[in-house]
Image (cartoon, rainbow, N blue to C red):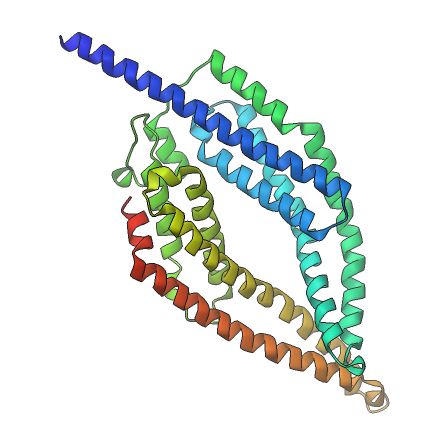
Length: 336
């Protein structure tokens, strides 16, 4: 009787394992399809949002690949993860420049004509840099097209089917850096709840820095932690509980606020450096009359407005975080 029971359990586990692997494969293929569509769109239209969409698609795909990595033990899978990461990094500078150019162009249009000089000069310089960055974008598109990630993943699945590997709890815990005593394992042996809890702990570690405006690096790290938790919930939402979808909405708000704060932390130093350059001739008695003081006043006022805006955003961030705490999303996910 004990032997029959063990066989039944083994059969049930094998079936669940196969179903989970199939689900993982479908999820990865879905993300690959979105990446391919985003690559095609970047090639076909000159739209800054196309670059953004491709970067987001590559991030989501890379996050999904990392989550399911223990299912695919071959080195080819590691090369796939690396190739997708290179796409994300290659697009970073181009996307940042697109954001800066759009923002500065909008701000210049809202200023009196006499105050636009410095901003228009910045837009011209950044546009030139963007043209250079486009070469990196095109090179990245060419590399990922030649790499053919969909065909690569198909080969990986073929390799995996011929050489099935059981999911190792120990290996997955080591890969995800999850403390073994905090891992909750589903019937297939995959520590879904533990992974979600680890992502939540990574987010919570930045909570003490919420109110401090000088903690620029910590705010940026918190933004990254929010993204990782969101992407994990997209894949593992059902396993994280009924409130996971609501938590994703709250996390999106946090990410948007932190993203706006990050944009300010990048653009204001650029404006400050431009002010320093514009003021440099004023240090000489024979040249101070040539300084564009109207433009300097315009940019200085813009920096002050952005400083005030950052203060408001930081207050919004604290309020959203408190709301998540009050509604129990953070504690629910952490205890999943």
